[in-house]
Amino acid sequence: MLFDSPVFFVFMLVVYPLWRALPLRVGRWWVLLASLVFYGWWSLGFLGLLLATTTLDWALTRSMDRVAEGRRRLLLTVSVVSNLGTLAVFKYLGFFGAQLNAGLSAAGLEAAVPVVELVLPVGISFYTFQAIGYAVDVYRRELPPVRHFGDFLLFITFFPHMVAGPIQRSALLLPQLDPMRRPTSEQLSGAAWLLVWGLFKKDVVADNLAPVVARAFDSPTSSGFGVLLASYAFTWQIYCDFSGYSDIARGLGKLFGVELLENFRRPFFATSPRELWHRWHVSLSQWLRDYLYVPLGGNRRRPDLNLMATMVLGGLWHGANWTFLLWGAWHGAALVLGRRLPRPPLPAWALAVGTFHVTVFGFFLFRAHSLGHIGELLARVFAGVAPAGADVAHLSLMVVLAASVLVVELPQERYGDTLVVHRLPRALQAVGFALVATATALLASTYDVQFIYFQF
Image (cartoon, rainbow, N blue to C red; front, side, top):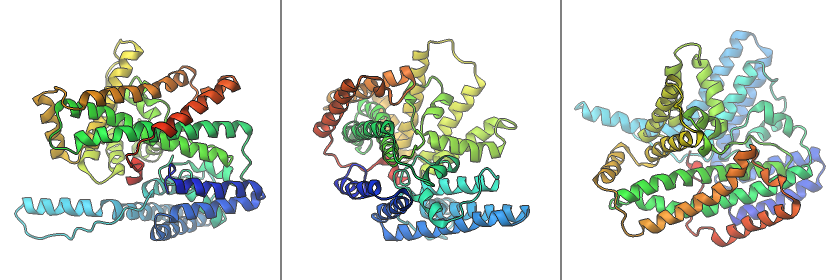
């Protein structure tokens, strides 16, 4: 059930008016039921797995309050290992089996390891990290364990965020779900803008760029210019796809009186790799910092090694492919160099352009199919970058679509406010809303593209 699909529109037409009509103490259980239906729409088997892991996490964290310190550490270990183990089986078992077979073959051995390819449960990377973060917070006594299973299940499954984030911090989300509150007029107005702007970024910008990207990365005959163009186009595609999802998620949360974490803060205005990761996929960046980088030693000891390890593992979180590991290593190296080298004496716009190009090359690595494919694409670029065929038209399309996003993000950045549209008079707000909604209806791509981060 995709946020931009007709079936989700019908789902909300049923769920939301009834939630508004019910008393809040009853309505929250209606939201829980709706969240289970939303997730189970993909697969009842996936829903069963989610219920099993959630039940185990709830039972383990509930027990932490009643045992001695050594047992509490054991319960935390069981929770983390069970969550990461489940994630590893579904996401990495086939990949590592194939790599082991390749290694055995290279060593001249004939022994083969069975390679099992499992269907990846939707959203498993996101709800797994959210559950681990909650368990660690309970272990650290930063919050008490949730007493009632239904409350914990709603925390994990609240449908606006559970499939592709943002990854929610327990201390921020739990108090908003018990008790739930009616949305304020300000929240409703913010929800309207986030929903329409998120749909525009996804359906108009990201989905119209998808064929430009596929034409270069998935064709063996694309030109060097086409590969370069597709690298820039994919950077805008994945940004508008994922930030569009995150905006829609925040907007849906506001409809239910819930404030979800802002996951993107105009990252292409960042003037350094460090600032980029304060703006891009904020919930994952904070999770990796608090639950991986700091426990590894943070800035206290071996910070460069800790940065590299954190970013490489962050790359692995995205999927079982060497290209994701290389993407993580690229950004880890950029962070280490940014930490070691003095800030260049350049204007902010020049630093932003440089940081953007670090990001573009990273996404070139991210989008490639394999390490060998990276070599093939680079060979095309170095062989010549002359445009061919529809490349010029695609360049014009990318510039127009990217400019349409920047027109909105420039004032957002100027005032440091994603909802800067609310600073306008109400009449102008209505005009802006109508323009974006009309553009979305008229210009939405017919190219069917699932949200990119559903595969992670």
